[in-house]
Image 1: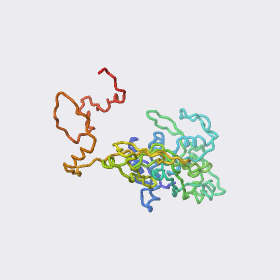
Image 2: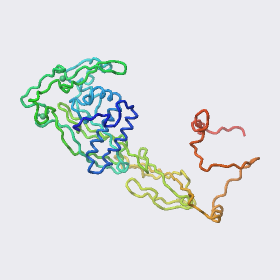
Image 3: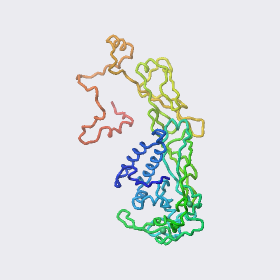
Image 4: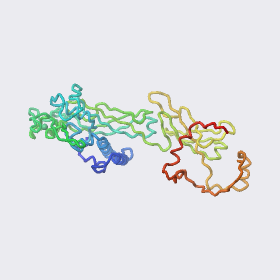
Length: 424
Ligand SMILES: [Zn+2]
Ligand SMILES: [Zn+2]
């Protein structure tokens, strides 16, 4: 894909010794900054390339095995051609299958304890799938969306048909690996030294190569050339996090192999208003104290397709809304894929009590008191202490002074149990 080899650690802006959580943090930051949907049209193409590079750096560096392979062998460990470039979504199994599949190396490979030799002997070889995360707005998951983007991929060279050399030229057997295309290297795995089989870097794992004068003029012996193509993916309405969208055979072409797929993994972007669970949605609606008591008829939330959702309150004269009350709206959740059904919408009532700007007169307060329900009977006790209090207490402080260090919150698990019927 991209013609420039860059250091994966540099792509994420981290040091070679960065721990996993740092890899993840750096990835999130870089992915967000380079997201193609978040830059002006003119910079989109460039952002796509960077976004992809960030994605692939993360895929390798966040996986312990792949990171080790990268640290020891660089990017050449991730595509059989040894061609620098970040295109091939690396799959360790595919890499191993490619290494073991070539040059008639049957039987157990030395140094690969636990890998049954020739584990996939007759599987038709495919170039690796290209796996990508794709972040989608909740609005687009609700309505469905077609996305077009430009992609550069390696295709078999049209001049030499993937041979890499001129028509009558003969390839030379590689002396470094004796034509095997692979070689053994010593490798430190933790405290153990092991031998590992890797693709030969002299011949790029081919076992043979053309001398400079015999190389194909078009692809310069690489067997593939880059091609730009407009790809289109359709995100179906109701799609959700983890869904895959597959573009069959659109991954980089590798001579002698079926092309793999480009696989998009949908990641749901957080929404400022709605949260989703399966096909259901929930949102908080703000209602003033006056509205909660006396009623209203208005739009309480703007839905994902832009419609206003209007409520009439009360449904029955005299009903009031309480803080935290849940209003369930059937059929206003997310669409369900391949069906006309929808989930439900759960609206949680948040009542806005008057703030310090409300300055009622004593007479108004007196009338309110008369109109609203009366308090419960007084609590009867033998002695009474009038106490002072801080009106802005914080429950985060609750239990914080406990010398044993555990917050009282964590000990409170008795609360859900049925009350004991002790003899009163
Ligand atoms: Zn060629
Ligand atoms: Zn070689």
